[in-house]
Image (cartoon, rainbow, N blue to C red; front, side, top):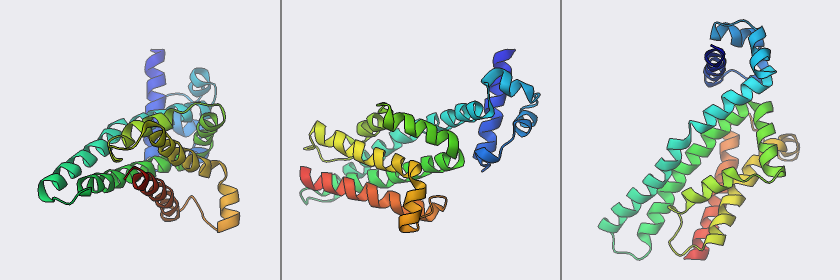
Length: 213
């Protein structure tokens, strides 16, 4: 019974976040009503609304797992097609990189939407990873980059690429006020946020690919 109620609360919060509701604007009563439960059960099972939102956000992030595989698949398919249709040296690797990069960029931008929608709780998770030594994002990214980057890319360079993509993009959300004050960039604006992501992702991957080539 208790687990059923907890599941309903997490699922309800996830639905509200996916519908575009801002985490800070959500109320305990609203979440409880969506779940068909009493508001007191939020604190009873999770301790606070923020802890419940964090649990829902974590589930949303886990839901992106299949898309990491799609990044690798896009790179492999593009490389295979290029090998069949062109004899120019290096062309299949460039095709794989561009296809994989496009898929990766779309994935990271969509994940950023979740960070933005659950700003206060996502910032806590980002801060923990950046400052307390956990590198889950970089490890997942490194595994994906193996299918994108040229075969001559050594392991340390690959890990550099993963770290220097993941860490700066995470840092954006911790230093958003500084970024906006200095550059006028509003990370709440999807278009402006995407432009920053493109700059970081394109710059790192192009540099690493050139080094390996």
